[in-house]
Image 1 (cartoon, rainbow, N blue to C red):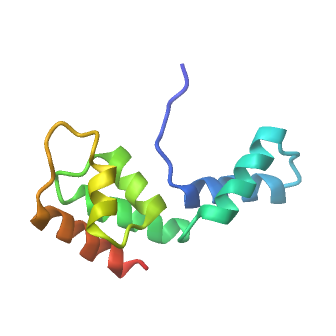
Image 2 (cartoon, rainbow, N blue to C red):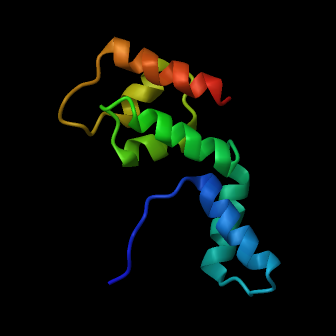
Length: 107
């Protein structure tokens, strides 16, 4: 079975761009994915990795939510609440402010 890893849009962009630059032909799905990440990736992969790492260090942010935050780069508390809306425990205002202050450093 293949290992699965959660990646930010910026990391996907780097992988697909590298594959394309190596002369490898991208499949139709990969071309669509590359087009999507080129439009919607808001940061480079180094910053995205640092952001995810910093969010994980908070302790209450899961890897999946950290990647979502890095992809969306929310600027408002309501946007952060939406990302955490599927969690069983609600995130309090203080924690949302921590997330926003970290994201702000990478904008």
